[in-house]
Length: 415
Image (cartoon, rainbow, N blue to C red):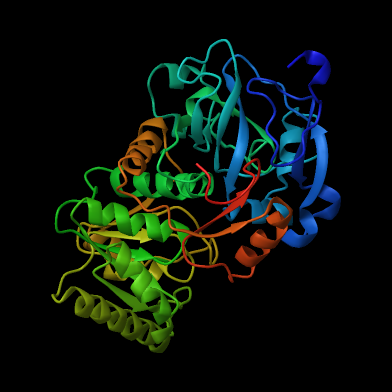
């Protein structure tokens, strides 16, 4: 094909010739003027295809995964991601979200050696300054001040025909998965992997009881499988008995319906004995339900947390002596209370965790490649439905497992 016949914009579902980067691309775009609920915030636009630097790769996106971070981006809270980047010196007045992708490499920077044009990849969302002194020295890049979540804290995420990523973010796509299946699990799976295996000595061991909040969701569905793979005993907490079978299929030894209890909240004032007694009774009843699921009086060595405000008091209460509560979010709120008596006298650990480094993301992806992880894709949306699927997530009406959006792939079921 001659350069005269090459287009500067291709319709969705029609891939440019391999290696040809058109000047413009279709994208689902958020702007400050329409911050609000997802169906208001996302709009299709045609924008310039981003240029890449020497450490970057340009990926033609076949499908994109859906995560709650771009519900936040569309709302403009708790952070105006566009304004934050502009304060840092960036010029763009828009945000292209999306922190999970499957696709094909179309261009690489001069320093990129792990992938080449034509490689089929999935993308993990950890980005950082690869030349930062602490990163070069071999420290965990997750602790670098330069760390950012691609597609949320950075622009040009996966809700566009082309996405700009760092080369190290590109990992091999599992050939047995469709484009939409491959796009679904990387963010939640890598996050779960770090939570469960990144904080020694509290890594999942054979026989460990592990309490997993939100077992029916994207994050919880990955955690159940990872614990089961390691020989642990995952117990899933869910919001409806209809989710029990889904969690058990993934490897949960049993489930607890959180709606069977009503003590979820921040702790009452410690001097209010009546209210404290009511909380303790609720937490003890929850703990007994946990023992009933396990079939023994055994407390979880690890509690896998993300609801935060409503559940942390109970998580700290039920964790085993010397155990760990590891948390990566606060979906019910960020202000959580801890009864310090249980923390210090029972020597429990409250550990924050955030996404994953390269080693952890690649370790999770290796399990996907080995067919040991089900991506738990529950529903696939069209590109024009990007706002709709985020709206379902915002309203907590999304299905169990993970969701994906077709971008460059012309249809579902393609590999």
